[in-house]
Every structure is written in C-alpha cells, then in structure tokens.
Image (cartoon, rainbow, N blue to C red; front, side, top):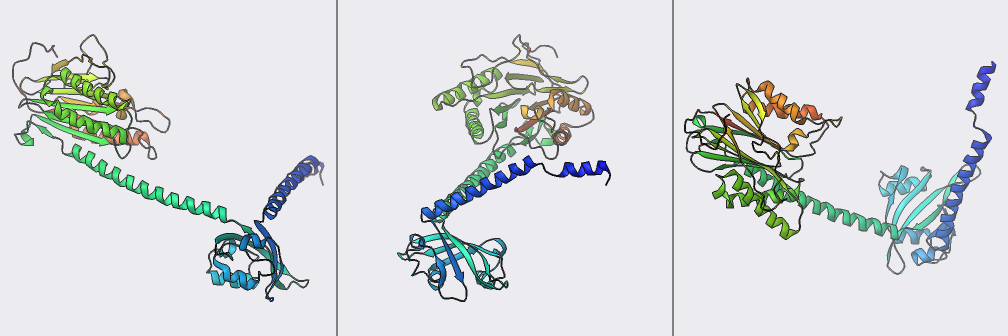
Length: 449
C-alpha cells in the first residue's frame, strides 16, 4: 500500500484517547440507568418477572408486586394479572395492531419485545397504571418459550398526563370560544367600515357626487387598531378622520370602539378641525386616566368644503397626508404653522391643535394612510417607506384613478413584503377624490395654493 494511502487510513481510525473518552461516557450512562432502576426497585415501584408461556405460574415474580397490585408474589399468576388488566396500549412494533393480535404475536414469539402502558385494578379496587416491558426468552436451540420483563408503576405519570390532557382540552375549548368571539368582533368591525359613506353629498347619486371615497383596510390580527371615519358635517362640508391606536388586537380595537362612540358625541364640533381633535383628545384622556391604561392615538382630521373649494386639516402625530394635483403632482401636506409636529391624542391634556388649509380643485386627490402602509418590511427588513410610497403614487397619478391606484398599491406592497411575509401592523388607506368643480368665495383664512 502506498505510504500516503496508509496515512489516510490511519487518520480515519479513532485515537486511544477518543475511544477511552467514548467508553467512559457509555459507562456513565449505564451507571445512570442502573441507578434509576435500583431506585425504582427500592421504592417498590418496579418489579422483575420471568414467565414461561406454557406454565400457569410465573417462573419468578419479585416481591415488589404487592406494592403495585396488592397481590403477593405467591398470589400473582398470569391468570390473575390478566384478570386485573383493564386495558393495555402496546407501543413500538405492535402499536398499530388490535390488542388481541398484539397479545397473540407477543406470546408466539413473533415480536422481539413487548412494551405496553397497562391499566390495572388492584386488589383493593384502586386503579393504577404500569409500564410492562419484556424481551423474549429462548432455550439453547433457539426455541422461544417465554419472556423476561419488568413492571414499572407509572400511575403518577399517567395521572399527570391525564390532567394535562384535560387542561389542554379545556384550553382548546376556551381558545375556540375566544376565537369565535374575535371572529364576531372582527365581523362587526369590518361591517362598520363597510357601511361607511362612499360619496358626498349624500342626497345626490354617486355618479353626480362632488367627492368620492376609496379605501383598503388590512388588519394584522383579527382585530385592528386602525380606523377611519367619514363624517357628513353639513350639506357642503364633509370630514374624514383616520387614526391608529398604539398596538393592535383586542385592546386597540376596544379603544377604536370607544372612539367611534366619542366621535358621534362630539360631531357638533366636526366643522372645526382643531376643536374636533381637542375634544377627541380630552375624551380619550379622561377614559385612559380612569382605567390607568397607557395608550395613545395618532390621527389626521381632514375636511372638504365643496362650496368654497377648501381643504382643511389638523394632524395629531400622524403620517402626513399626500395631496395630488394632476398638474403639479403629489406633495406631502405639511403644517403651515411654525410648529412642525403636534402630539398624538391621549398624551397631553388641553393641547391647542392647529388647522392648516389649502385650495382643492377638480380631480385633486388626498391620500390618508396609517404608518402600517409605509412601515411594511420585506424579508431583508427593509421598509417600504414614504419615499417609495410617494414614487408609486407619482408614477400613476396622471394615468390612473384613485381606486385603481389603491388596488395596485396594495399589490405592490404584497410583492415587496414577499410571499411568506405577514404584515406586522394594520394597513389602512383612504383616498378622497374631488370630482366636480365647485365655485364660491375663498375664505380669507386660507393661504394661496
């Protein structure tokens, strides 16, 4: 053999140190098994037996059988054990057979070993469980004649398994009930959104309306903390409120439900954007302070005066709306006052929110959205982002209608996120589309477009 090949084979052989270490580990494991077995014998929870299947008695039965069954080793026979057996569940190679067939194969020597969890009734009538394990016995000529086995008292383990199974079933049933409640709550939440207004004014057909609304709404969980609300204020004024409650799920949805009721209560103030947000803030803070809950809500409230062609908006810590003019293209609606940002609702009491205003013309569109839209992440943990959102709307603003833009945007977001990427936050977007030219006096408080 060439020297190099001999060296390769030598490298494949384990060293003496490796063999010694391996043997030591095996001996350590064997010692653990012996220790556990001896402990079980000492505690009377295990007993060794030997059985000849042609005999009516056990060749050997350990004295510990009395601790397990209540019968002494002299009283215990195969017939007695069979009589106190309530049920047996074979495992291993006999697991998928009927109990009768498993017994037949075991006692005919057709199975290499017998392992079964066996339920018994003791001499005193107590129900116990034993683990019955045995291996075949053969004579010098290889003829099968019986088995050598051990019985372990596993009653405590079985009781724990049964208690766990019961608790698991109770939890499963409870979870099912919770899931059903959540489904009902989700249906109610989606129904409320589905019945929102799709056009304004309400007293004319939609094809002749001055403002139309389009939206998409994707909850991250069954219940959402995102919401939007369309409020017809007067014959010539309509408002759109979009908001995002901190977090999502049940807690956030409960706050959105409260806000819906609060909005109806303060609707008489809906013609004044700043006062409307101040009233929302006050109502939310009063509830949160009484419940000792910590939360906040970002929101934008936009109103459109269709008679005077005026768009007003107030922002409570929410992503800036996107304003699209066919001629000039999309822009983010900034604050026109010195203050750049104003706090979310539920943080500061008596905060004086401000109002910004601009002209709105025929075919102008205002896109309002929650941060779940721009914060969608892909598999590389890159965000969709406001720049990508603006670029997408810009590329389609002169050729597509708002409804189609929203549909295409949602498809684009899903592609960006990837097929296996779930949304981690709620997604909500509303498009306000001015359709009919309206003429009227421009209020003096409105800056030039």
